Amino acid sequence: MERIISPSILAADFNNLGAEIEKINNSKAQWLHCDVMDGVFVPNISFGVPVIESVSKISKKPLDVHLMIIEPQIHVESFFQAGAKNITVHYEASMHLHRLIYQIKKFGIKAGISLNPHTPVHLLEEIICDVDLVLIMSVNPGFGGQKFIENSYEKISKLKDLILKKNSGAMIQVDGGVTLENAKQLFDAGANNLVAGTTIFRSENPAKTIENLLST
Ligand code: DX5
Ligand code: ZN
Image (tube, rainbow, N blue to C red; front, side, top):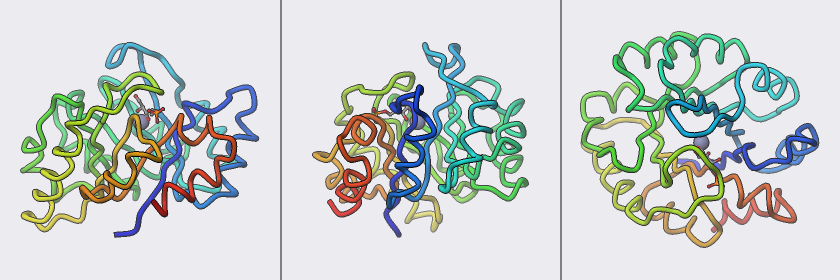
């Protein structure tokens, strides 16, 4: 599967968001990751629909929207209308995940499920064939710049086994504490889609950092 890098704008300079997005437009990153936080599902509030709508007007990369919110089923249509091309919801926040996945797919976009660090991979057994992507959180969601949780490698391998066993086409995305140092080990463990905020936007040359992540 093709390797994908999805830079997270949470680590961008919000005073110069247009210029920051332009850097990603001119890079080899394939997606642009947008972290939506509601202050309830996670202990932080980031941004919502109006920001995503503005970002979608200038981003040349498809918007990869990560919803860290409760009751995501109420909001997925607004995020689709705002320009999302992938919507990932949390396993822990969705009571009727199967219905929600098809609610998202009906818009003609990709649907993903994210797992918090404590949520085991085997809980996806009955839904792995219905999703386009599984996001393994390698930090506790809520903040950028946190330390990578080492147990994530094992979860990636377990997820890869499950995907193979069930013949699912799901991508494996990893989010949180991704660096130039651990990217290779993440790809080797079976990840094919890496989200990185701090590593990309706080680097001197984001486009070069993206290239380095892809070719690690
Ligand atoms: C964390 C977010 C991440 C965050 C990653 O809750 O889901 O996408 O932006 O940031 P870094 O790459 O700095 O760990
Ligand atoms: Zn994220």
